[in-house]
Length: 346
Image (cartoon, rainbow, N blue to C red; front, side, top):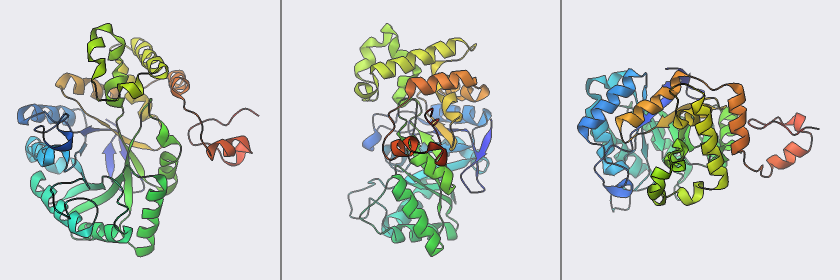
């Protein structure tokens, strides 16, 4: 499997990472997601490693720590051969300091994650959200201390606005603190908002992008086009009302058509393939409830879309251009070439 450098760092990650939010015991805010137990998790982790995956992503809040514990058990002696990324922010208790990005919570949460992961270090420690109630200097200084003492090797953020990412990098640079090398963001054919500011910011500032939600809660598997799945359309990930539009169905139909042109390919693989060709994307996180789903997703790294197929998907999934990009595209686009969209014909 291809590997890419994560942002402007020395860390190399597989283009497909394994997101293990599904590892767990049905506890906490993600209780409807976590259900994969030890034996199944061990098999899935082995499959991922055999396919060349080096990046495994989890968070302390996934099944209230059970995801981290199960991942550690599944990796066993393979731990030194892979990269573990975990996240901190969410509530892990009812105390005043069991939530957010204060120094108090960060240090306690990191130590707790290390214990659950049965590891002396975390390869990529990511803040799961932005905390406007804590000074950035406090958060970044605490994270820098964790790096300096060897408990954490690289830092990343997730679910930030571009201005929040930029501000954090500026604070870190001015104070000589460890900066974020990655941002974990939502991005798919159905959700292309990141193209407006987050991905261009990452490209300009040297921050790699790790993608979550690449299949839009499973919608881009195109299974909901099949009448057999009609009864399950009202459940899914609770996102069907948002995704199941004429645009969504057009994308799903195109994914199905393109997959049919590639022997053994599936709509999910096509959707993942498209992401792997987008500027600024370092790694795409795939998850799976079953070994069959995981094998299907991992196979996306074994082939590539044709340029004409990428263009067709771009057109089918295009979103309105918002301000200020609309102004920059209208007036002298040659002075501000778009990162993702071709300037309009003059």
